[in-house]
Image (cartoon, rainbow, N blue to C red; front, side):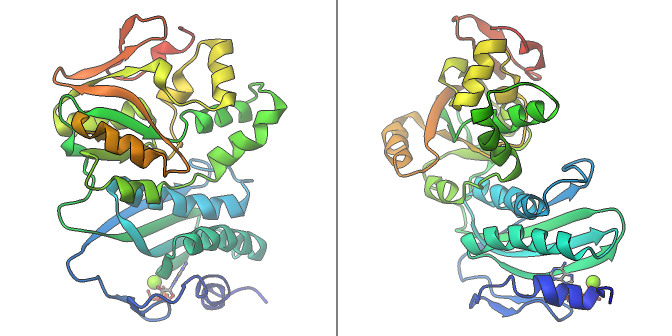
Length: 323
Ligand code: ADP
Ligand code: MG
């Protein structure tokens, strides 16, 4: 018997709702009814993944489920928000039970990790596309906005940069040592939203963003919103062993500078709070690494490993192959 929209929702999605006291009514009615805690603002974000654009037709559905939620939790993390609820709009070419089971498994496992409840959605027929809207809580005035960076602030990033970009090159046929393969694929397919780091940086960071489009472009958004410039020190960028080897072999910094999909956080911290930031960093699994400084002069500059300074305003693609 083919799955109807209703038993599909019951089978795969009604269960993805841990008992949160703030969900008065979840999946099953015309609307969900949700209670925002007193003296909190609701942070809301939405992202769509489209087959053939954001993932391949043969992508593992568990990974697609994970990533469709992870990219949204990453946006909440970038504001320092505490994730609470999500809604899910699914457009499916056909009700494929095996695909749906895998998708629900990946989505549900990450939702459970963060205590997030799926409270509703929409299911339609058409080319495969997944839209997730995530809701979280922030204390008024404490969200990490893009506009808060000031000259003299220090620039930090979580995790390592360029793994997802290198994974993409590997999928297109670029050779990398076999011992790096599973790490790189994991970094591209199962990004870890830095929710705890974002929350702990509230009240300390002056600005924050998550790295979905690449460091140059995303830091560029912070600089534009803050009316500042910055200088980055390439030799300080946190690199995995796989990316370090790649840069050593090719001289190409573009996976770490301009490739997207790492979903690390980039934050700015006032210089007089450097000690606090670095003490906090010891509590993060993912680490927090200083990479540069905010300056009054607009634009983005890069101190190359040989000490020369390159103008990186408008992207880094022209650094491919330089060292
Ligand atoms: P309506 O026609 O009133 O919009 P639907 O038939 O679209 O209702 O959905 C019925 C219920 O199932 C609603 O509570 C809706 O939020 C929920 N729902 C539909 N699709 C999904 C989905 N993919 N994931 C989670 N909940 C869903
Ligand atoms: Mg509907």
